Image (cartoon, rainbow, N blue to C red; front, side, top):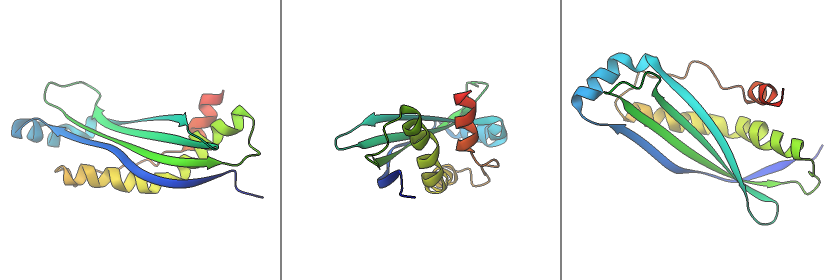
Length: 140
């Protein structure tokens, strides 16, 4: 079987870590277990069957406390899709599932480095994101 896509490039498009002051840092350090990881994926067509895929991870306070930190990364992949892929469903699966499964190890490592370097070395992402499962849920 031939590959349906090829990742031509991967890079950090934007990265942010915001902690207002030392009081906020201390508060967040005690409450970071309540933070929630959100993921968003969007894409933009480029020339020659190439697509820019932006995967955004946000790690934020679900309770919207006044003292909170904010962490976000936008990780961009430039993907060339096989000429034979015409069906919109096939393309969607490639972008939301297959590409994500391939780039996620790099994205997770980079995002964890951001959190650790921001003063939260104990943070781990316990659950691996199952993009195949997310895609199936979205499709139903």
